Image (cartoon, rainbow, N blue to C red; front, side, top):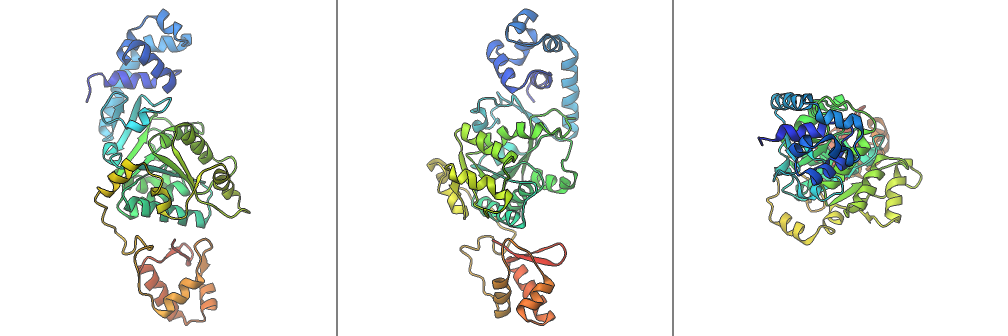
Amino acid sequence: MRADLADWIALNMVRGVGPRTANQLLSRFGSPAGVFAASRLALGKEGLKPDTVEELKDSSILEKASAEIERLEKLNAQVITLEDDEYPDLLREIHDPPIALYVRGDLPKAMERPALAVVGSRRCSTYGVNVAESLSRDLAAHGLTIVSGLARGIDAAAHRGALESNGQTIAVVGTGLETTYPKEHKKLEEQIIANGAIVSEFPLGTPPLPQNFPYRNRILSGLCFGVLVVEASEHSGSLITARLANEQGREVFAVPGNITSQTSFGPNFLIKDGAKLVQLWRDVVDELPREAKEQLFGIERPASTKSNVHPIFDVVDLSESERKILDILSADVPAHIDQLLISSEMSSSDLMNALLGLEMKDRIKQLPGKSFIKRM
C-alpha cells in the first residue's frame, strides 16, 4: 500500500472537488500532499469555493481517509490511484479520469484483455435479455472482458453471460463498494468479484443517488475499446454512455430492434447515426484494433461450463421431437408449456423429454412460470 494513499483518498472525499477539479489541482500542485499543503490564497486562485478551501485545510479529512483505509481492509478491497501502475491505461486517457478507483476483485487481471461495455435498459424485453446474455457469453468466451453496471435488465444479463463462459467481467457501480444495488444482485456481485472486479469512484457509504449513475457511465465507457447498446429507450442512460464513448473516441455498437418497441429507439437511432450493427459476436471482434486481435488470439480461451457455448460452430444432434419444439420456439417471445402442448400436438411425456433434452444441449432456456425461449 502506497505511503500517500490517505492523501489520495482524502482528496477524492472533499466535497466540491470532482475529478476534473482534482486533476486540475494535481497538475498545479504536483500531488495530493501538495494540494493539502497549498495556501488558501493559492487554492482560491484555482477557482475553489471558500467552503471547499476550508475542508481542504481541515486536518479531519485526512483522519477520515485513514479510517476509510481500515474499512477497505476489512472489506478486502483496495484503492488504485491515478499514479499507480495498475490504473487502467484507457481510463487514464479520458478527459476527467477518477483520481481514485475503489476495487473489489482483480481489476488488473480483468483489464489484461480488451474490454467491451454492454449496456441497455433496466426495463428490457425477454429478447433483449436473451441477446445480451448470448453476445456476452460468446464475446467473453473469445477473450473479451465484459463491462457493465450491475443494474437490473441488460446489465445483469451481460454479466451473467460472461460468467456462463467462465469469462472476465467488471461491474462499474454508482455506490460505495459495501453497498449492493440492487440488493437482489448480491450473489451476482460475489460471482463478479471472483471472476473480475467491482469498481467505484465513490467513497464508502455513498448511497445509490440517481445522479451517480449517469456520472459513473464515463468510467464504464472509458475502460473499454467500445460500447454495445442492446436495448435503450429515448431517454435511457445507455445513450449517455454511447455519447460518452463517442466523445472518448471509442467504438459504438448497437443491436437492432423492433421499430414498434420503445426500447428499440436507442439502438436503432445509434445505427442510423453510424453505430456498427451487431448480430453476432464476430461483428464486434471485426472492429477490434489489430493489436487487440493479436492479443486475443494469443489468449487461452476459458473452459466453458456449457456444452454448447458457441452454437455457430457446434453441431448438436437433435431428435425429431427436439427439432419440432425448437422450430416452434422463438428467441424473443416466451412460450408457456400449455402452448407448446397444443402447438406441437405431442404427448405430455414426449414434450417434457424434448424440453429436457434441449435444455441439456443449451438450445433453450426455461423462464419462471414454466415458459421457454430459444437461446440465440
